[in-house]
Length: 92
Image (cartoon, rainbow, N blue to C red; front, side, top):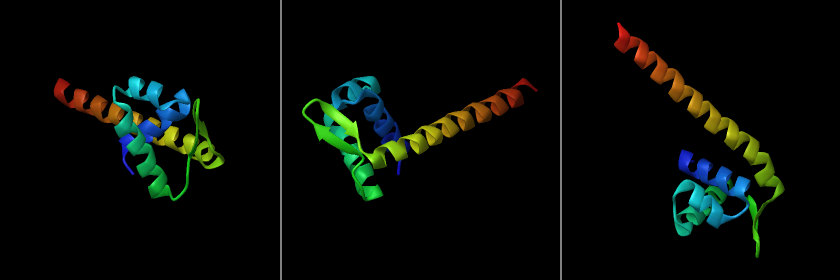
């Protein structure tokens, strides 16, 4: 599972639409759709219901969204912590 797949999942979940999520991530729709399909394949379950109006989270998607957001927040926190330590080392 890649961070890109998690970021793609969260964007589609929040936007409710692949096109809007693709614009938000500065991607075209086909690769974003492939990210979602790859994630669903890896998890062994569908996360979204595809509708004529967009994408709606299924119960598995609702459950996974909380975890995906937490993982991405932890990665962001780790990056900030390491950058802070790197800045401290260059100040000496």
